[in-house]
Length: 218
Image (tube, rainbow, N blue to C red; front, side):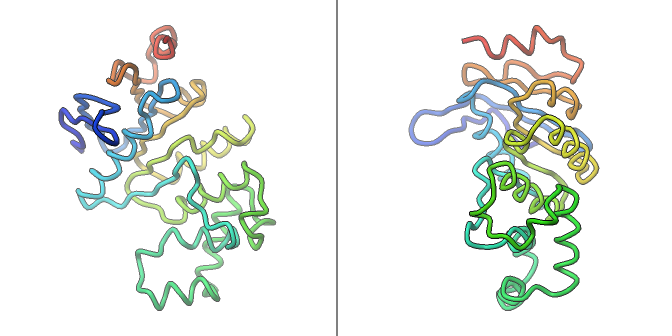
């Protein structure tokens, strides 16, 4: 999938990233690495739009979760498939979920350890629980590619490892921004490193650690 060709990316007059080329093969798990502000979120947003333009089904875990605070965890998960149906079906789903839809959403919540929180309003949940709801919504949606922006940053290391396995089993291809280098090395098949507004590293997960650490030099 050729997604970007010599693209300048950003918001406003000054690009955050310049001259970006991005090709992702089906079956690749790409981890985006770099210090805060390096442009990982910007690159994810551009990649998502390019994938959707190619007609691919994309599941998204945004960094800010993009949940509806007043709705339950279960109803937020159900929102992962709103664009699969018309307005009447969606309204009925949010008011009184059909038995099959509720069962499917509960199964996904169980996979991220949130069965007991299913009917609680998201605004009452902890940061880590909200992040898992956002992940569950993406899992419920499913698709060809997962785009995720720091999807495991608010959970403890043991949970992160378990959830990483759930994610890997759910999507054939993914582009994920991660702050935890160790987790990235365990999940990814390919690493893309950003620094100074450009891609400065593009290699396998076996890339030497010193080359990875150089990404974080100021």
